[in-house]
Amino acid sequence: AQSVTQLGSHVSVSEGALVLLRCNYSSSVPPYLFWYVQYPNQGLQLLLKYTTGATLVKGINGFEAEFKKSETSFHLTKPSAHMSDAAEYFCAVSRGGYSGGSNYKLTFGKGTLLTVNP
Amino acid sequence: DAGVIQSPRHEVTEMGQEVTLRCKPISGHNSLFWYRQTMMRGLELLIYFNNNVPIDDSGMPEDRFSAKMPNASFSTLKIQPSEPRDSAVYFCASSLNPLPTPNQPQHFGDGTRLSIL
Image 1 (cartoon, rainbow over the protein chains, first blue to last red):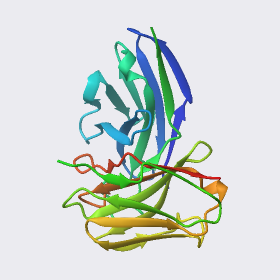
Image 2 (tube, rainbow over the protein chains, first blue to last red):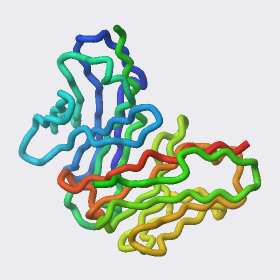
Image 3 (tube, each protein chain N blue to C red):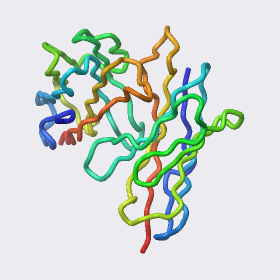
């Protein structure tokens, strides 16, 4: 079974400040990991994805995430927040390339709403 | 390229009415997913199709919900009769491969915001 925990349902930062959104996962096999962003009244857009072998993953809009197996974490960061970053962010996990079971399932966290203050 | 297209974007209807949500996946994608998003439960997978065949419908809440995929370019999610607790945002997603891999992720539509009065 897989699960995702996003610490903090709401994070508020000032424009220009560091953004840190936390994600911890649980998976019985090495997972694939994703961050999606959802702007108001829109669907989810893929922000970045974890590829085995590279622990630091760079995504769009200056975001990056670091896979830490020992901590079962995949936190999302951005050095300097911009007003346009205000959105809800979802961490998600899948079983990766392992066959069997419901390996097509993408399990999402509950989401973290990011507010950027001017 | 066009993304996943959902219609309608918004639907408001009275309790007891039939509701039909529509989805056009990305051309060439052979996997289609319907999700429901609520404040309380977050994003839940309702049903998954592969090559137009329903593979897993364990997430469908109850018999009032049904989904079909008559061809590779169209799917519907129907609620009959609708109830106020069905109010949510319903997303359709498609992917080239059923496994959500880094190189073949799921692509989401903009959703249908459903309100049952």
